[in-house]
Length: 174
Image (cartoon, rainbow, N blue to C red):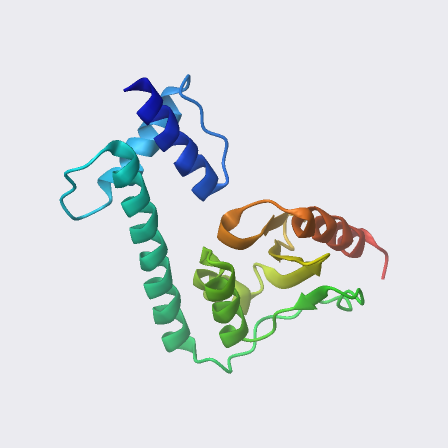
């Protein structure tokens, strides 16, 4: 039914932390493509299949993150920014491969799969704590872009606060 499709699209939008709309063919395509990744048979409703697909994708992310950690080793140091790290309570630089892997597991998102990028300095990663909420931030030095998500790729107060603190740090003069 239309209601079931709308609910499945909303579930996926929440999981991906991305705006999706029933009025856009690309959103429907993305939903269909996402559930088609799920390898097992499903005999229930669309929302049940979406939930299984989300769980399957999260599991795959954990497997890929573990494989990346196994390749580089937990003590592998991540690239450090050229400028001094922010000295703000609640903003913690993640400096090891194991630290980034554990951040992904704790926050239930894919940051642990970014080990190679972090080692090569394509992204700097931070754990954010603010008013009882937490988030993970990536600062991309080449573009100055800040990508930040809370647990399960959701937005929260720590995301907004951390984004502001990292933006101040990124653009302050040395």
